[in-house]
Length: 329
Image 1 (spheres, rainbow, N blue to C red):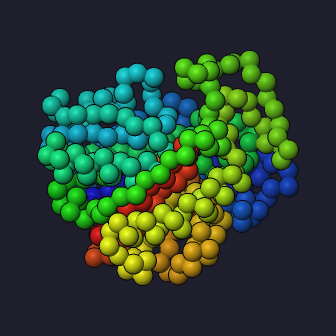
Image 2: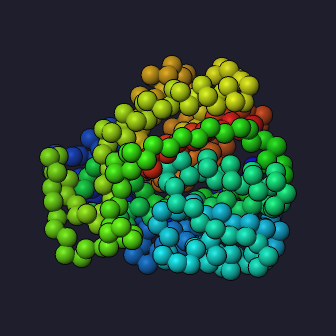
Image 3: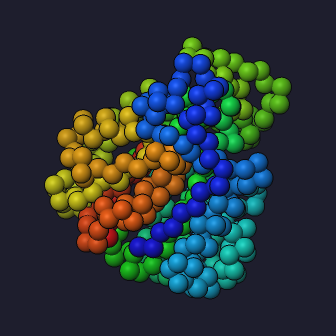
């Protein structure tokens, strides 16, 4: 399966952040998150710009003619406009034929896995032959600069994956889950039809000294952590059962790269051998829907992910939402 990714040029380091947050040194941020730096979009740089860059890299490196693409899927929670769909904008920018379908879907941390399922369905159902699956986020635009709880974690980035008939043969069965009762655990409250942006919204500090307004992203870290520890073991068993395999048959697990502490805890609680569990976010941070494809590319380049391996993918987070599958590379 062909995958490429793109990151903004601007880098925000722990050294820079430590000057803003008293008591939070570079080393403390790294130890808490496993992240030393993250890429941050420029003021005039959008998720669509990053997706365009990732797509062009994929098409060029993979030797794929844009005219061969007949469907564009874009996972983003930071679109350029309320309307039109950013996928439509990308169809034009990438020189993809007007006969192609294109749509955005708003999901987040589980978005890549969901996108693979949508792309597989389009190809398997005979509705498309070459699906360009894109993920792109610029969460940093939603973050208050004095909210260390999220600013130390999130980075911006995009990915592009070609899902064709060969890729579909390698993609296994899926498991999904949704718990909308936890919607407010990770949320940007304003900007939609429910509540308009309030430019006069006051800044408020929480008990940990994180500052934000209701226009900024809010994440209840402990609740997201507990939710993840609850759903991961069950989802691992379910996706193995659906694919007719045992946990021991999986060669590598690439989960949503939320933060190192969470991933380390997941690995230990589930008794996963260290050499089978891939963690790689130290210089990119949590790029939301793009974490899994970015990790896959980097694992391949480092020789950790090798041809023939069975790889379990799992995304979990905002929604609350989760999804998993197994791919043979």
